[in-house]
Image (cartoon, rainbow, N blue to C red; front, side, top):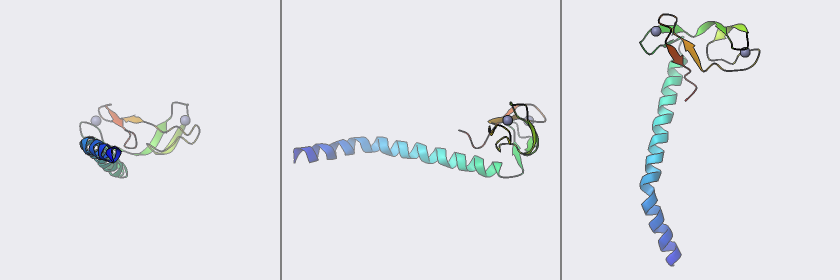
Length: 99
Ligand SMILES: [Zn+2]
Ligand SMILES: [Zn+2]
């Protein structure tokens, strides 16, 4: 009986933390989904707001040059680019699929 009570008390104490965790996870998911939706468009904005085409010629770190989507895996080494540079201001644009 005491064990059950203790467990209930523990849950009651821990629930605000669980709630906080759930909230953080929800916000994170929403952000990732939002960024993912943006990236599924034809272009992605740099931090300053320049639209950058996602489809084009890309150079992979392995040396391959390929035509395709910016954050699609390289056809040679299968590495997914984590970032691209803005074609206007050279600022880094992070992949929408990475946290
Ligand atoms: Zn590659
Ligand atoms: Zn820019």
